[in-house]
Length: 281
Image (tube, rainbow, N blue to C red; front, side, top):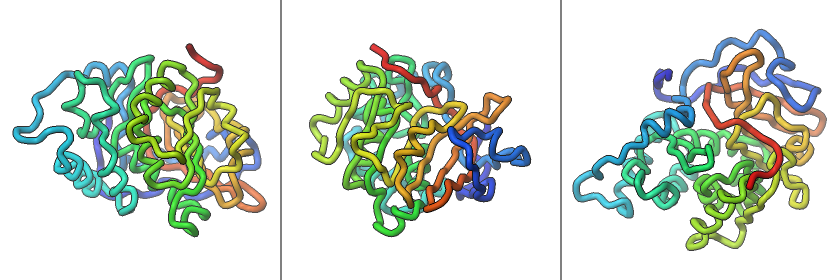
């Protein structure tokens, strides 16, 4: 796994336009150079399981201590997260409540961890990076917040909790019923009224609450589904992992919808679980 190259986040490819959707990287130009490594990709699920070994907590620090989250925020700042709203949200949400008890001592390390059913909770650096990109959309810049958000892939609910601390409305959809139920239970003690959890097929988005100012996906496929673009508001922004054609490499792709087109930008390499359609029991 490639390590962190240097602090600071940079765009690896200039914005370009693609009239074809679903968006595929093999349809947006073949001259894209390999992304510059500025974010350590999440490890595949098998590696996450291998790394999930209980460790002793730091002496004198419980997981409920503000100091634990403050240290995580300092690390995020050191690797290039600069948006103060994002850093504050990351510092406010207790990540340890969303991981299994056996792994709780690793809750504030920058690592992805298994949450069951073949899924993982994303690394804090990946969550903060993607949300920071989301806040760069035109509507978000104008309002100072992500607006109405659609999250594809609730998982255990951690990223939904972070988004809910930033946005006035969040709809989070999960295709696996056990994870949907798990997130609902974990979020119950802190769940605000403006966060809605939906059991459904994320590939289809969630038309009843569309259009969305921000769409963020926690799973990567070969293409950005057309349904997501249809549900993205003018001035809205979508952030999702996407596989490069002919390779197994995923990169972050940002899509901005304007009045007349959709513009895309390619960012650094990431590693997410596969995007799948349909419902899972």
